[in-house]
Image (tube, rainbow, N blue to C red; front, side, top):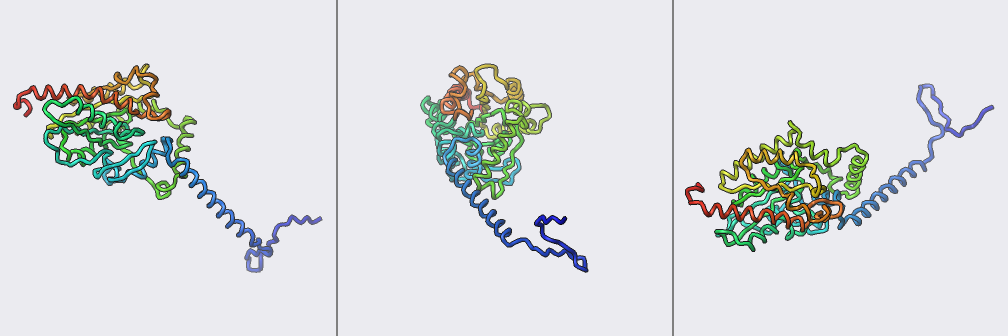
Length: 364
């Protein structure tokens, strides 16, 4: 019995050539084209939907991606990797973020310092930038207002320049100061140190697709979140603590950068202060990074750099998340920024009073 399976009959001709007597119908090619078009239209629809949903969102991953695409530009310097593009603006994490002609999230400043003005440059990452905070509620701007209201010994005015750049580490902050911020001739440099500042310098790699597609950025962000949920990425506290293990290249580079900053400010006769901003997940109880922050303090003490550990002034003000930029993002909000500035003001005033009390020969 012969059973017809409905398959095309195939045979070889005398030259051994495979011949298909029953060629596939043309509709297979048509169906394939229709499928490709349908997938393309569906992708366009999803792209439009994601753009609509995340146009003004508080989703940390998507907002950080938009920040990198809209406000940053790559540079060839491997110790810097990227900087803010000048004169750009974007709506990020619920607030407007704009850069001036120098790429700072601040108003315009001339490089030449006005007479009788005490100028401060504040270096840091997204905590200094003011992630999720209006510009006038960032640490530099609150500090500037408080100092001007307090009155500075020997000066009529105070300027605090916000040189914070999101995702920077200590190496990048110091390199940015060397190349850009040093030209403002500050009287004081404040470096805001955060626990992840011992990371290696990140490299911004955005393909044409990732730089333009919300859908691609969303998919990558959710894939990364899935890996963390599955335990295939280290927990945040383990990751941060691991940055300070002996021999880690990022920590070694951070120590060297702190030394370089101390040398530059000394050569410029500018004061230097390092503030340690705590990770705000767990500050009211036992802080998980006491050991790591003591390492930072020891390095700074060896370099004779003054340091303020800001955790005590942030404790005891209610649950930790009341100091967060959003319920899921522990960047400091306006209240936390005010508490930080309030701890820096007395140090500056005391330092200026002590400096003014010294004879001119002692300042040489």
